[in-house]
Length: 146
Image 1 (cartoon, rainbow, N blue to C red):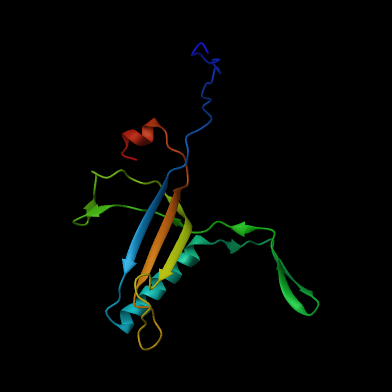
Image 2 (cartoon, rainbow, N blue to C red; image 1 turned 90 degrees about the vertical axis):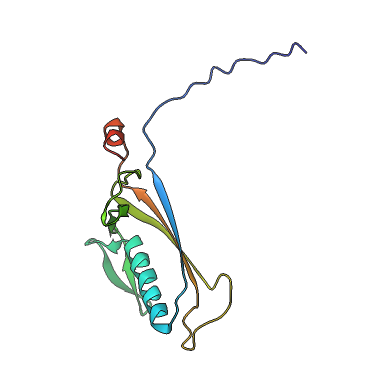
């Protein structure tokens, strides 16, 4: 009734800066079956790079006549160096990106038309890649252009 509420005394507790994430989307429309095959190779490259390899601590065992892999360790997936270029030179007008891991690969085939090339290759591929930097930034990094 008085138009007042209790002060919750909320304060922010700083723990660490968040790791930045970057998303890139590409629409690839091949003009030929050969270009469609190249797009499939591009998609495969990024899908492979996003996932880890099995580490040395893994072993195969047979369970009821079937082979299975006991997964105890992974090797880190590939790390990317993302650079914005203009006329072949680093574009200093763009915020630079630290080495990053590819955390998500999303592929959509034929989003706007259900047509295929004669050999079954898609006529359109949308590729979305999400990267996350491998380390947190500090003020020194910001002054360096990150």
